[in-house]
Image (cartoon, rainbow over all chains, first blue to last red; front, side):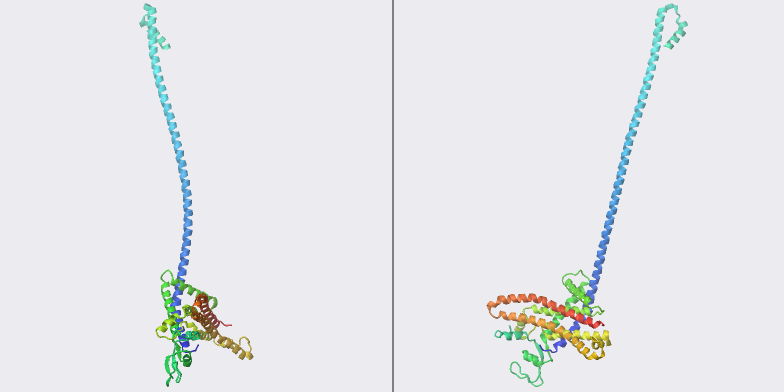
Length: 156
Length: 292
């Protein structure tokens, strides 16, 4: 426990180390730490912003999805409507076609009927004439009474 | 132990003697019975008596070497951290060093409200350097002195902070800074503070001066001697425990237990003392900056 030159030596060493620390140690470490703090807080802010953006995008995507679903529903409904319309049209057409066919058949039937009637009428007239000829024989002159017979035939 | 047939008190005394190089005055009786010739002699002291005879013109080589070595270790370590911390993601030693820096920075901010770029680096240097010097206390007391004795170095105290020169050297350094900043910041106000405080009346100037000077001068002594006292006492207990090993085989186990307990406790003490030295330095310098 003797005070000696060590005291002075330690004071000098102390001064030198403190100056070294002040010049070459403290400022760079402080700067580095401050820069890192800034970088980290910037990174955190960016992460937060990205999270917000993500939430916004998700919300937007959800809205889009709802819209799309609604649109799809509309399309399906329209398609359904159109399908039933087509079916209705087809039914109408078929009904019309049926009607037309029926009418054509009717017309043909009518035609055939008329023709058959004409034919029948002619034959009946002939038969009546033949019968009358046979009954009346010589008394009736076919050439003279042809007008009468035709009139009769027309009345049938 | 330095030699096998020494008594316990010799052993303890040997551990408490610095390796001192200095000038022995003319006519001193040396340890081997020779007398120092005319004009004195520069030599390594051998024993406490020769150290005393050397007086002020001597230097404790061991304290100086360990202290400078640890100071350089601090500078090298933190300089490396300073270079590296800027360009990489911090890890390992960088984290540890930055934690210390942050801790010191917070301590300074809490106590020191002026603007002075010297205070924080000063506090960091004090904290780490004093801690490293104190840390030497945890190395087994005989390991390095005994190894060095084999190499022919007779005395060795490896804990610089158990040397009052070292702790007072730092305390006086702080004291000089206190005086410098007191005059620089306050100028004449510093004189007024010493003379007109606490009793603001011209009649009380001598009383004030006495009280203020006493409290001012007490600061470096309390600062330096507190660290010295704590570390010296701690080292002394380690030496006593080490001496206990020599008391016989049966003492080995209690001595080992004691050593472990004291070492664990001492981990706390060395950190605390380094911290106290740093905080008091900040407080004293903060007082030097503040005007009442």
